[in-house]
Length: 168
Length: 124
Image 1 (cartoon, rainbow over the protein chains, first blue to last red):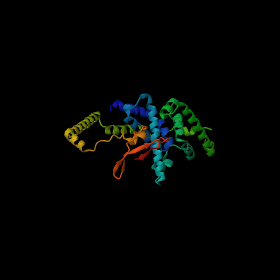
Image 2 (image 1 turned 60 degrees about the horizontal axis):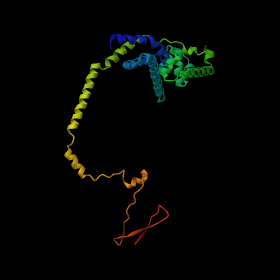
Image 3 (image 1 turned 30 degrees about the vertical axis):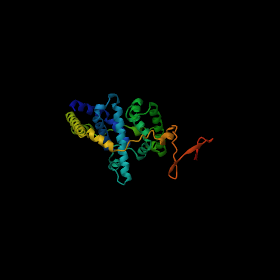
Image 4 (image 1 turned 90 degrees about the horizontal axis):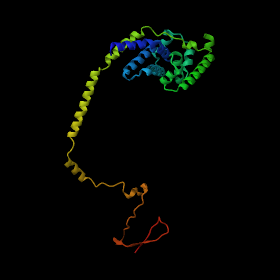
């Protein structure tokens, strides 16, 4: 790897760390873990750098990040099932720099994963419908319909829980 | 009802790019160089060539193959066996009827029937 390559990768990391972090954080709800997932995402893509097309790079990054985040979330749940509380679960409540109430997190967590992914990419990644469609390998029309359903269900749950009306 | 609060923009922990640069260096150091990959590929190719050559040199000669073939029972033409006629929809060739009475071959005469599936013989 030449220094120019490395500098370019770090530059891309700086530009995309924030949107990736914001997406991943809404899946695993832990700041340190989320940043680790973002970095792991870049490292995985770097290993495949010879196969990456420029026009599909962003889609690949977000798809990889969502997959890695979902895997970590599943692993944390598994540890919880076997009776060992994951470290991120312990750290989350007290040490997280971002304040989200438990009902808010639960409302998002309870969405079907495919709806949640679309919603996170539309609201936080600044991606267009065609880009999201490419990233998730779905039709553009599906992006719109999933977003609409996800938002409706999210609002309904937040209303039922009184989160929106009480906290905002 | 707004869900904006759920999607407010968060700042990642500081120092992420520096940590990523260090991890990138570590991963790059672990990756085998292109020269090492070429050498590994060459070694693998050479290994395959040597094994192939050894296998070819150890092939038994023709004489011993013939000898082995001669000891084996004659090959049976399974496809043309009468047992497969019905299965393959072929018309069966009627077998010659042999009847023995008191250990001696007897003459038989076929009697005509109206049912084509039934054959009646008379022992003379």
